[in-house]
Length: 317
Ligand code: HEC
Ligand SMILES: [Cu+2]
Image (cartoon, rainbow, N blue to C red):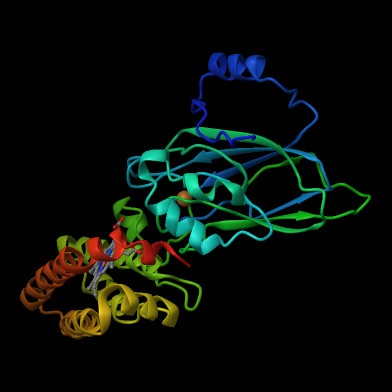
């Protein structure tokens, strides 16, 4: 049986090391189509479409550019089989922190993958595109990233005109200046709302985390505009999808679900109050409400996160 190796050593920006790597690599990569991309703090690949002919050799080189430490922001590249359930895989991956977020039990759904790259690090993988024309999803399996939209498509076609040999991406920084916060402070937070539908709880949560950070940045700067925008994003966060609610019901039971929903409701009402206080530019209630929100986030986690995560039912999709 062939096992997939994803966790190869990370290539740093050291020419010597890179040479050593290519020299010792078993197969020749020289004829491969090279695709260079960056993983960003906005949780995006800068290349979201790769074209290939059936069986074409492809080399993906992924570099992370981030203002955060690796533990908070790192990216990898996982190319999935056509029939893979990406959401289930991403959720299983979130629990595989000890294996760089590559879920052992779902490896049969992965065609190719890299290890994790933190800021300034580069990882790569060479693989042959599937023989069957079609679209193959690739994702980042760092917790929350796929849910937040970190994905792309490998399109395999019989097209006789193969696309250009090298795909490179434009500078990933300089985007997401919507609030001006990044510009003025150098803090790379943005006010982000989860997109609807496709997003499981984890994706919503990662958004809450970001928006709460923006609220606090606004407090430190006495910038009510920022607080107001971020509070609104909190209030309008994506709905928890129905199937996720159903799963919470199976794991926590009817009573547990009721309490969970009540916790969420209460949390919501406080977020609304925060939004109002921000519009009224009243700092003291803003600070008090923010503290209460943080406390509510944490207490919901203490009560419900572990029971959900530890349940095998939660892992099923
Ligand atoms: C109603 C309960 C509830 C509330 C309120 C809640 N969370 Fe969560 N949160 C969860 C659950 C459950 C998970 C685990 C989801 C999973 O594993 O799929 C989670 C996971 C997370 C994660 C993922 C981190 C990790 O690896 O576990 C972050 C970040 C997060 N929450 C942030 C927040 C923030 C910030 C708030 C408040 C603004 C908040 N949450 C409010 C229930 C809640
Ligand atoms: Cu990522």
